[in-house]
Image: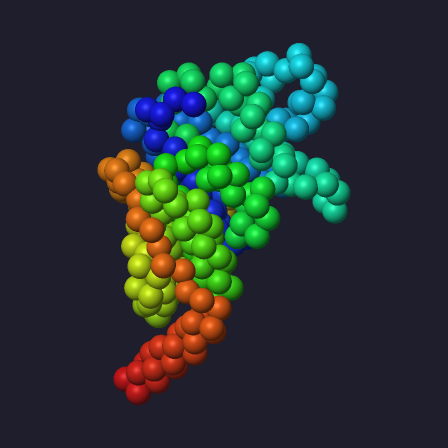
Length: 285
């Protein structure tokens, strides 16, 4: 695999907006004149929908149809925004192992030489909190240089982020640390920033960027577009360009310090007190 490419992965709790973040970051890099390959690693096969404006055939589908006759043109699609897209795909709900779909996709992309075509950036958008070892395949196969965790201030999202950190620590052993930082999504006024900063401080995790909760971003997602194609999205476009530049300038990773289960439980109480104090302060103003 061509090592000159910058290879990043976005992980996070299901439904946290990880695919939306990943798609907009990929477009931001394309706007910077970079050649970008975006790989969706989710059996829902919806990572590239905002890039392609529709669902594209997955690697697993095409392999089932064509077998050894499969070519790069069968699975690689170019978006209007200049991002090359691949969807791994996977089995139907309730059948088979979705993680194996990721492993098969990585093997297929290597076999077809797709990684060796001069990409400046390769983006992996990966499902969930890596409970299944298959979803950690990009890390296990050393296909990524940096992992970013998308989270909100909700406790279950932070639990998922903590679990992902455990996998990052495992697959950073004996290699360059993989963790790039946290991306705080759906940030709202109030204690949201303090909550994520508290979690980041306890786990040794820098916050690479905060993306405010936005109707513009949500409506763009409904229409299967990125904010770069929305006239109302100028402020968010600047935010994603800033995030892309931060990722581009980051040359190394760190090793996070995930919390033990008991410490995560205690964190919940700490965050409760933080929220309670904030509400009390506002009510007494």
